[in-house]
Length: 122
Image 1 (cartoon, helix red, strand yellow):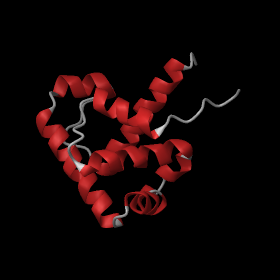
Image 2 (image 1 turned 60 degrees about the horizontal axis):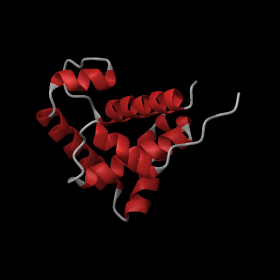
Image 3 (image 1 turned 90 degrees about the vertical axis):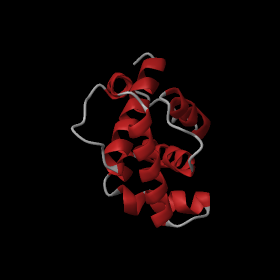
Image 4 (image 1 turned 135 degrees about the vertical axis):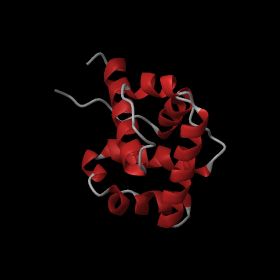
């Protein structure tokens, strides 16, 4: 079976906007790149701070610490501002508490992969 093409950075940003992630935070751009690199090679999700953050830091001309911090800020604000029911509709799960960066990245990556499969008729 032929693998579907990897979504573009722009299409990932579009999905992130559709699920109401606020673009006004630099974490928006950074999480989009994290997801892009994770989709390109799913193995990167294992220990992604060492495998993906350096790539994103280089892409965004910043430090690895800044990547983590800005994504955490994005998640904190998303969790505060978006209704719980909408989050459930997107992720099809409920969290007892706000997810960690790694949990959130994994869930977003899975969500975008599911959308890609649906669009390709898989």
